[in-house]
Image 1 (cartoon, rainbow, N blue to C red):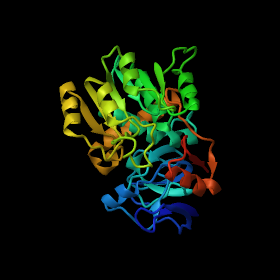
Image 2 (image 1 turned 90 degrees about the vertical axis):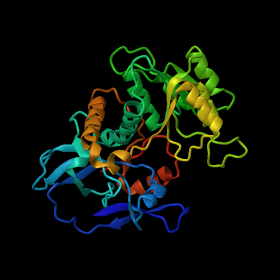
Image 3 (image 1 turned 180 degrees about the vertical axis):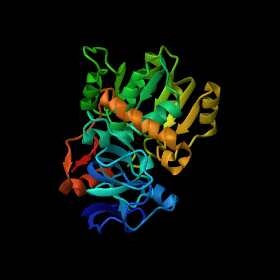
Length: 357
């Protein structure tokens, strides 16, 4: 039985991916669930985070969002029984690679998969759903009538965030990084028969670099500013000082601060965000807040375990009710997993990559 792992020979070096032959699984412990994996979504491996929390190993397991069938359960497992269909996210410290036919998972990382949701969609939506819930429910408390700006809305995460915000009654504005993305966002409609109203009230095409995002958002909100901003990274410096890896399609941090309304909430994925005193002063005058989106926090602390599982269940329910319609690529066969993971690690995949067994 083969499993996919990543290895990084020295810091800063690109990660390479290898299939390793696995010995037989260890015996099922009291709270373990043995799962036959049917689909596994591929996500970028944050090697820096792993080394910071002392989880860096020579071989890093790859593929953490899985769906599958329960084969066997430990003696103290209460939630599951053999033949149950399940979905979940393996924890950061997991020794298991999700890109493997059979794995052992602690029962507290799994929830039941609804019958009408297919394996690929379940595995491909669970991570983006968790990030969207963390951002919109726990960090910003989205509510009916609020305005939400989702940057790079055509990304897998952006798509789910737009669908969740609109379902909660928010007015959504989004940026598009290409003409294709713009057309995709303009075609998005709510679930249900005859839904004509687009999910996104305004799509701002930033692909030519001529459009001012802050100006467009202020115009759309009658100069009041946006209540919630979900970024996809921001530029911290002027164009010439910014590292080449930073996309020029990303807005500058000053644009985000400018377009925030009174009491606005900025949810950022920019882990190295630097705010100068004038930036902080502007945020203070608006009574605005900045929150960092790190969805790993749910599994780094077990205090929130019940809440975490409730979120996963809700994501599956919204998937089965067609409220979530994820941005997935065609299912990938196991023998192409290595190549696909290399693309994901280089951030070159525009749709969620899912391995189907």
